[in-house]
Amino acid sequence: MTSTSPQQPISVVVLISGSGSNLQAIIDATNSGELPVTISAVISNRPDVKGLQRAQQAGIDTRVVDHKDFPDRDVFDAELQMCIDSFSPDLVILAGFMRILTEGFVEHYTGRMLNIHPALLPNFPGLNTHERALESGVEQHGASVHFVTTEVDGGPIVLQASLAVYADDTAETLAARVLEQEHLIFPQAIKWYAEGRLTFQDNHVYLDGTQLPATGIDYADDKANN
Image (cartoon, rainbow, N blue to C red; front, side, top):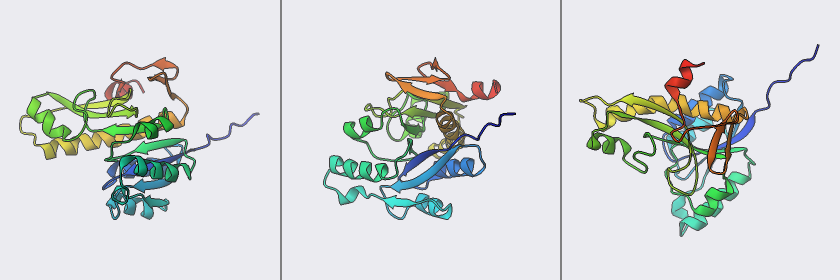
């Protein structure tokens, strides 16, 4: 009788800029055995943020590469890249990392860097997504996981979760509900990547060898089918 060995976890480095709630969702999914990953390091561009405390409490190595210590984006990104590569990660995760990255940095990690964005891309790339969603009067809002490319928030989408916008919503109430969805879809996308099911080729995303549509997979549909 042949036994199968458990899947070897992949190494990931998580980049943050703030409270790290998505980081916590990833830590929790890893600790529960849901995610076959090892979080090798958490790197922040801001010192003394809560996300660093979350990582330290989980026993994860932390680093700070403060963008204010560098004269321009190129020099900062070069230092950040060197710091990331010292951990030899299989995947780089942007979990609320609030920096626009240079083309050379992004290309260095092509196909192995994922981002979470608080909107249903391609709608509302950039900042202040919830305020803009309310101002535009959309009936549906949500979150997207996508591969990072040189176009800001323009990389191919892996997974989206949508929710209804209520008449009495504020930017704060909408943000809170969207964040709950982020905590669901980001670990799911990371899991697919760690299992070797999610791949990036020629600016397209494939799950189990099938090219995904432009808006990726709808999380509700994925849950219904599993």
